[in-house]
Image (cartoon, rainbow, N blue to C red; front, side):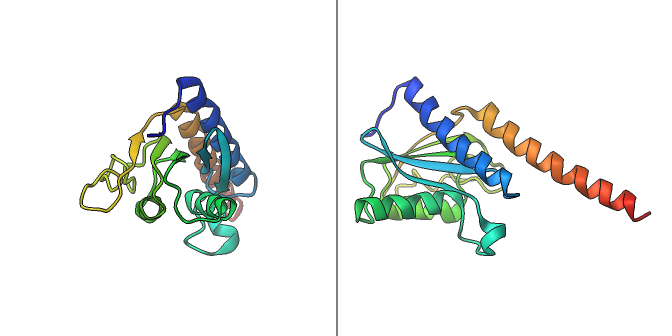
Amino acid sequence: MVQFTAAEKERYMREALFEAQSAAQIGEVPIGAVIVRQGEIIGRGHNVREHTQDATTHAEILAIQEACLNLKSWRLEDAALFVTLEPCPMCSGAIINSRIAAVYYGATDPKAGTAGTFMNLLTDTRFNHQATVESGVLADQAQAQLRKFFRGIRARRKAAKQATR
């Protein structure tokens, strides 16, 4: 079983928050993820869906792909995922299929979160793999990044609308 101290959880979530900031800087929804194995980050990712115009380029998927390449294996059984927003159904499926042992996330996602909020795929015993899940790791910081991003979008839309009047 993969376990971390409170300080380690914060350290790795700060790395995920850094990835989320990288997404925001290029105009993407600020979601970031890192995968940790034996005290080392083996995969990183942040959303690039708008840039790639590929619905699958979520932070978690990119981090999983990098981790698999680094390990030369699709099995991430002794790894943990740290992600700033609760995983969606697609990402939860990838987590299950890659056998990630533990998922730590910051902000909940009431509309699409499948790690305990909207539904819980990651601990469902009907699947051939389950991951332990912990929510709320640096949740305030993760939520603040998302709020700031969407506030900016709304402000730009409002300004553009007023400019056309």
